Image (tube, rainbow, N blue to C red; front, top):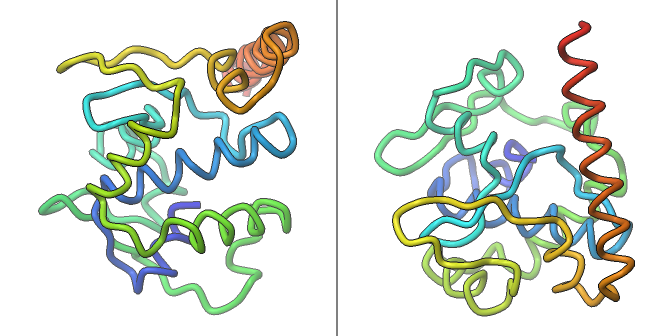
Length: 175
């Protein structure tokens, strides 16, 4: 996802803008198919919602060969694309649906500045809460509710996502 957005922006982007685009893509996917594209954990931070594991990758705090192949860590508040994307096959880990979501988010928000996106997520993402200078997890239930799901459905969808995350963690431990 990060490589895709960096490609669309010419290979370089503010890490804050990239983070907002990634969050909005996950949120859009949840709105359409009840699941995010990533298995990341969203948190509220001062400048809006953040995908916490991706943020750690951007800062170079979590080693990942896949991340390092495509994205250079934050320098001067920007991340850069390390490898050229020549065709769709380079993005083979993204489904056609994922690409559609990314295209939609880019069309709607790619022209905005990082600060416009901060304002947008503060105003339009009702699940975000200002934690001051800390961070607090965003409950998927609040995301689904903000996306218009009835509270009972939002709770069921949250439980399903949390169960999938736990299974993912178990799978990683067994591998």
